[in-house]
Image (cartoon, rainbow, N blue to C red):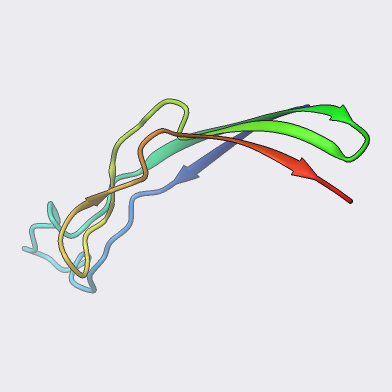
Length: 87
């Protein structure tokens, strides 16, 4: 089995001053981004499945948060390998 997850996160304001005139919003907004995750698995036997998961397949790096401690990026590409065992 194989699954692809596509998520869009819109840019957003992190402060209540974003909609005010004469306010520079350059450091008050996060970036919009599209994140693609993928997971695939293979059933080895009854109740046993191996799988791999890749978060942020495209390795898109954007500013996901700005408060409370300044600009921070989203999670970089990460890969997991595991086994599901149901007994």
